[in-house]
Every structure is written in C-alpha cells, then in structure tokens.
Length: 315
Image 1 (cartoon, rainbow, N blue to C red):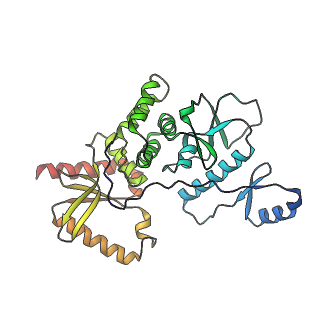
Image 2 (cartoon, one colour):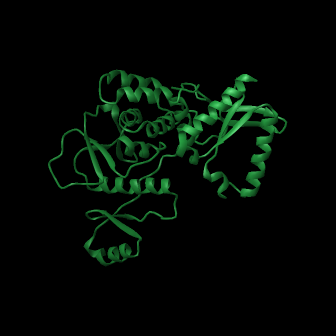
C-alpha cells in the first residue's frame, strides 16, 4: 500500500456527489406527478417516492452511478430501521471510484429485518457498527471511509475493490487504519483477499483505468510500476502515468475523454500527444499506450508489457 503517494501537479481527485432530491407523493399533486412520470421527467422508485429521470445521454458508467444515487435517495426516504449505507453504496457516497458498479443499494443494519416482500434493489447486511464506523454525509448515514474500503475489499471482485481502495487513499484514508481493521478481522471471510488488494493499493493512481492496469500487471507477477513520474525532454517536462524508471519503460493510460472533444479540439489534442510521445521516445523511453479496450484481453496486455521490460533489460 502506497503511504507516500506522489501526485502530479493538478492531478484530479475523486469528487463526492450529493444524493438527488426526492419528490414525495402528495394527493394534491397527483395529476402533476402522473404527467411528469408520463413525460419521463420523474420516475417512481419506491412507494410514494419519485426521482428525476437519469439523463440517457450520459456515459454508461456515469449513468449507473446516477441511477444508484437515485435509488439510495429513495431507500433513505422510505427505510425506517436504523441503517448506514455501506459497501459499494457507501463508496459511491464518499466519492470513491467504482468499476462494474452493481445496481443494488447496500445498507448495514444492527438487527435482522422482519420478513417482507422480496426487494431486488435493497441489499441488507446485518453487522455491528461501532461509533467510529458511523458517519454522515450531508445528513445521510454512511459507514466510515475506512470501514467502507475494507468492506469492499472483502466482498467485491479484486479489480473492483482496487479501484475503490486507490481512490479512498487519494481521498485521505489512513493506510494504518486499514491495516489495523484487517488485523482485527483476522480469520473472517474475505480478509485474505482484502489483504492482497490493500497491499497493491496506491493513492497516486489518477483514474480507475490506471488502477486496473496496475492491478492486472501485479496479479501477473510483473514488478510494481510507479505512478506519475516526471521526465525531462527537449520539449519540456512531461509526466508519464505508470513507469519503471530504471528501465525507462512507461505506460500512457488513455481514457475516452482525451479524444472525444471534452478535453479540447481532438485534432490539436492528437498533435500535442504526438509531439509529447516523440519527445519521450527521443529521451530514451519506451512508451506503451493502454486504453479500456486493452482490458478485454489482459493476457495480451501483460505480454506487451513483459516484452517491453525484457527488451529494456537487454539494452
């Protein structure tokens, strides 16, 4: 676990969202609510609870988070039992990154709920929640960030939990707290997996894709890369995303935003990237570019990196 994470100047940090406001059913507004629901302005998520419809033009990942936040609001409006949002739902509330976010709202309660009808959205966990694990965000009960990270590391698939852990470290969670929590949970289900995840976590990661790439490389037995390395070139100093500085091998992790117009004119972005790439190569660096598409064939990604490291060692 990285304890002295170096982040490049101006590096993004995860943003904490706010739960959307709900509209409660009111008999005097029945016609209005019916009309707004018919027009897809509102959607009924739980009995008597309406939320604004999520914009369908959003990217799939952003839309999933927005839909989960809406369901969390609906749960908070209706649930009468003492609860705390937990696991992946608490991670979203804290602003952590997520990967393959599921549709269920997770809450932790102190006692088992009374039998009731099946609920495909709400996932209840029954567990003690000590005072230090109880938190509030904008008046909404959530498990503490440290508790949330460990819960996710014990229950989520490893690629999903490394994304949560990296972003939580960037948000300031104490690595010693996470280690202590695992030590106190020794022998419990999922603790071994959580130790593997947290040992690989690094708060210097600047995106879910960086976290995922690093995780898969480490899982394949490759040496640990370093995040955010400044490299001096004839064109100035550039920061590379993931690197093995002693071998001058770097991975540039490219998300879709860079080239879809949201980061500026795509042609100018491409020209700047080519100039940057040429300068790094002329400075003696081997540069591999990685996108989300490369995660569809992790073995191929690992083979590319292994080859680059092997060639660099033979120089």
